[in-house]
Amino acid sequence: MDIKNYVEQFTNHPILFIGTGFSMRYIENSFSWDELLEHVAYELKGDESYYLDLKYKYQHYYPEIATSIEEEFDRVLMENVTEKFKGTNKQFYDYIKKDIHVSRFKIFLSHVLSDYRIKEDMYNEILELKKVRKNISSIITTNYDSFIEDIFEFNPLIGNEILLSNPYGSVYKIHGCVKYPDKIIITHDDYERFEKRYELIRAQLLSLFIHNPIIFLGYSVSDDNIKKLLRTIFSYVNPYTDEAEKIRNNFLLVEYDKGSQNTTITDHDIDIEGFTTIRINKLKTDNFSALYKELSDLILPISAMDIRKVQSIVQDIYTGNAGIQVTITDDIDNLRNDEKVLAIGSEKTIKYDYHTIPEIMEKYFEIIDESNYQLLTLIDKQTVQSNQYFPIYGFSLINSDLNSVERLKDIQNNKIKGIIESHEDLGQEHSTIDEILKDEQIPRSKKNLAINLGIYYERIALDDAKAYLREYKEKNSTDYKRTLCFYDYKKYL
Image (cartoon, rainbow, N blue to C red; front, side, top):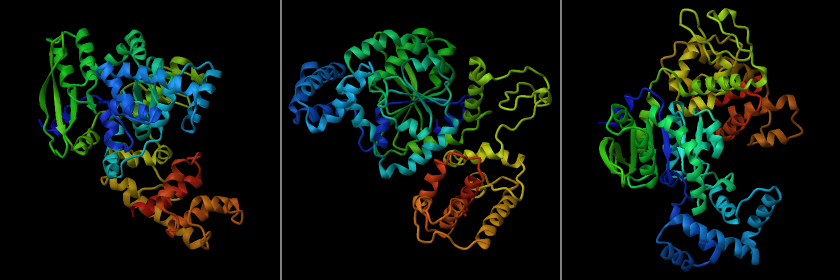
């Protein structure tokens, strides 16, 4: 079966289960488990023999190797701190003062993995990956780095946070995260404690596995994480039932095959030692972009973005957050909650477009990154007045079926033309937005104008403008909307 036909069968938002190979595909300074421990050991000792002796002693059992390195790390840094490890030692003592128990080894490990660099030749594939975000429920990963949550802008969850979370829009970091070195699971004792308290987390994840398609990225067919997961699931579900067959059909293992452009999915049997043989779907390929495209093009009844919003509202209702008022009604006209509305009923009694024009503008870059065709269909249901700022050029490239495109382009063109023709050029000596903001000769009231003119006359790089707009705090302000229109015009005209 081709990947297109396989993905088209999905009736729910898929979950990504991400392993080390995923980070190694996209990050220059990424490591396998073996390479990571070898790197830390070499930094500590300055030669490779120390690590090779550990591999021989513990027969490649990495949790024990990590335990030994952790103990040696503490001993060496307690006796003699070199310049290389001064920062690690200082952070260690800062943690201890706060009663946070964490080893120097894990602190140094977090430093190694925090400052990642993306491979330049993977930039276009990462752009395709970002488009998948709109259709992904959540992500589960055994990786420590923050690459995937940075790309997807999902909320990372560690430890007990997993039990108290909304699954949509979350990254379940089941082995910890570099941002919290005390929660990293890597030594033998870490894994023993993890297994003892994992039961509740396992139950939470099991619910996701039963109801959603699961796509494994960055693992091999022989990976212990895959086998352990399958053993867990089919210890709760009889492997010979229709339910088990449905779960199996939802599993897709994407295995890296250098140079392959294959898009055909085949059956693969995984032998679970002491248990049974489990058949799952496998895609062996180097053509990850093809997979991302099909996941991005998937049309489901409701977007994952909207579900994340609904869950946020429901969570507020559960907790009584911010004094949320709840009214149950059959008639939406009777609702009088100005902050949030969750309407349940039929189309005959309820009509509500969740994304308004201001919301669409606020999420401009998310929508562009995701190529969110579905969400943009709402533009035709909204009214944009001739005196409003609205960036249509980028959106029109994603959804060319919009009826209002030409009208909205005229509005955007006229707004930009009016500014250009009614003002003298300002800030001609500046090539960055930061320079304009720091220039005391440009009045505060004219800084936005100077930025827009700089974008229009191509003195300011579009990447600079994009970074500025992404970090802009008041996204409902006229200044933001105006600058966004200038950026959109120059980027996508």
